[in-house]
Amino acid sequence: MRQDSTQADGSVVLASGPAGSAGAGHADNPALVPSLPAIGARVSLPRVRTAFGVRSARAALSVLILGAFAVVVFATSRSSPLVPRSNMGFPHWESGPLHGLFGHLPGSWNTLNLGLSAVLVAMLIAYGIVALSVRSLSMRTIAIAVVALHVILLMTPPFQLTDLFNYLGYARLGAVHHLNPYTHGINWEMHDPVYRFSTWHNLKSPYGPLFTAISYPVAVLPIPIAYWVLKSLAVLLSLAFVALVWKCARLLGRDPRFAVAFVAFNPVYLMYAVAGFHNDFFMLVPSTAAIALLLARRDRAAGAALMLAVAVKFTAVLLLPFLLIAALPPQRRLRVLSGVVLAALPMAALSFALFGFTIPNLQDQSTLLTDFSVPNIVGDLLGLGGGSPALLRVANVALVATVIYLLRRRRSDWIADAGWSTLALVVTLAWLVPWYVIWVLPLAALGTSVRLRRATVAFTVYLVLAFMPAMSMFLSAHGINPMGSSIGQASKALQKKLAQ
Image (cartoon, rainbow, N blue to C red):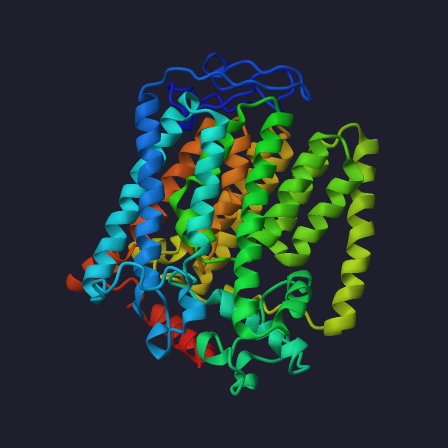
């Protein structure tokens, strides 16, 4: 079959092929990768000279850590646009132990948003430098930096988002108020203390039954304790996810330093996913575990793990056909499918016991637009008034056609093909938010496709620039409104209604 023949240019971010014979595809440039011993043996990864070198790599890591710390310090110091709804109240249990650590800090809207934009751009540049020089670092140094960043970000309130409080709001609907979050919105609990911290009050829960069930026991705790439990769970699961990426790289015979750095030092991953404490990590841990288990030839466990991910977020099902392609001979596919069934049955029983025949509300969100979703931007450029329903249908057809094409060509690098499919999914979403790129990151890091890594990095740059506050300020100053069409205004009106 035709392979991705893009030539590596010598940069680590664009080339990370297998170092031994266990890889799933051909290396982009094996000469760049230090050889690894057989799986299971003790691995000693040598430091090698690269274009930037160890000093540049350590300096870039310092920028990432200092940038994250600076944002956390400002976010915890006082109510500000960095923490939504904090102007309505900013209790100490939300602001955290760093509150007031550096006294009275500037809090003007423009200053904070411009400062945040500058920090995000600096972290984006630092990410590129780390990726280009990661093989000059030891795995120990990388691991310390990853843990340090997670500890720092644990201290921040949910950064620029209220999703964590929405999780608690839906969970308290069921666990405290005995209402079905798939048939009721958070506005049914207006007198609950979590209400003023949450948004999407009129939106029924879009989250999967397994995540909702997991959040029920947390919801019965006092709000401050439940808040810190969910934050801590998200951070711990993020670390577990990074560890699984490391494990998959080892099983593939790849240099795990590159895979870990490519995922964990991405500024969108850090500042939007980890600092936002998103439930995507509840999906990414079992979905990445499914890859690791399949590579270890534990096929039933791989199928079961993937079904746990699907029960958190349905988008994880996109990985299933690629797991089946990878599971050869056919007997292995039957074992994967048996694992899928064995896990799906108790998940279905759990969902029925808690929620009856109702399912997550994916319909409302799928009809909403964000300013910089690709369909909305393309629709504006084509003069269609943004992400029109017809254009969204075309995008869905294009997504299905892409997945079918990738499945039919049956390349040996099924991980990269799964990555291309996932990237196509994210690009075609009408409701695009920055942290969705983390669905692609592990697949791009572990696959052999140079083009996929380039596309993922390019998309990260787009997300950072498009969603940083300075971009909105610039567009507003020049009278540009990506949601100014009738279609965009209708979407904004629906968003407002769902938030009431």
